[in-house]
Length: 94
Length: 389
Image (cartoon, rainbow over all chains, first blue to last red; front, side):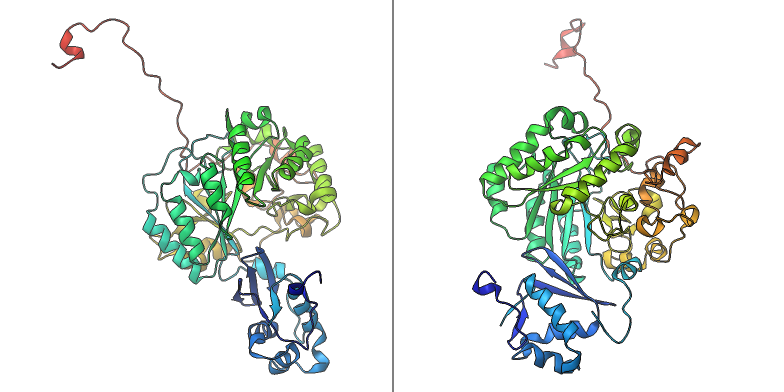
């Protein structure tokens, strides 16, 4: 949280994939690659892939999770995974 | 991540192979200005069948479709290809990032400035000694100065985070701190990898590979100081020396599963350390493209099947080292389902002491020793023997 672009991950706000990140579908989920930081990340199931890919279509993260069939009580592990992606700049605020 | 269905561990997923490699190595040419004694690809002379510029671009198009995020370009010395920069630009314009390995011969101030301006190109300078004496004994006279000049040019041009790539040997293992200091001086990152008995490396491995004591020393150094050092996961055969997970990385052999090698004539091998017919999966030109070779080659399908632990099955470390490096075993003439020649439990040494046949290299582009031309020692018998006029 050193600067404006490094905002803490808030699931009540809108987030999206960084424009330099590519998503490659895989049988287990997906690979993410950030061409800027050259970091590789793994999405370990297909639901989280769906959430990540649809973030930009929703006003906030919780809505994106609900749309992917994850109700509020089940969201904690997904929000944690997304916050890790935000820390590594794979996700940025909308 | 919790979910209703148990998700297999990532390592298990990787062992079954992915739809496309995560990273692949592409040797663009067998031509090289140096003749390093341990060259993995036995490089020297250009292969006349070398892929053309257009054929290379077609491969890049295919890599883009397969979403191979980046390629590690090497050789030979890739920058001696006249179309090298054209291919780098083409790859990055097509969303295939490039990291290339060079001995530095073409990294002039002008080239360094151009590289500094690109966000998608990584440069890796090879150096096998932190002093000219140790480096040049392996890589040839003048090669230390050439590499340092390249690093200076990159640093002066503002290129950040170049990689210094070191193959760890018996003679430079004591210089790991010096390499780290060298990297710090040029704003670079140190990358150290394992000496493989591949290519010309087969001829020098017995004398150059770190001793058992030095392997422990290397492991301890990596655990203590390795968090900012890249290794390409190449020391997974040492992971049995300590707690699981003490070494960074996935610690698995990715050959044919998550990595592979494309050679200068379009042959696809299971990994960069396995240029031999035994590990040849197919050819891009004659087997319908890279995607087809990656997905359908019988060799790759075989590698993605569960592998037998063989003689290592009863060893408590098998889960951490997985029997070590396939190429290291093959090129030292050891059985593929037995211990790695540098097995941390010491099973490699007696295996090496037994009678074994080292496979002969099936791909060799080494330059032969120069043939000295002689001046005539006596005058020509007749004038027209020298001049036709």
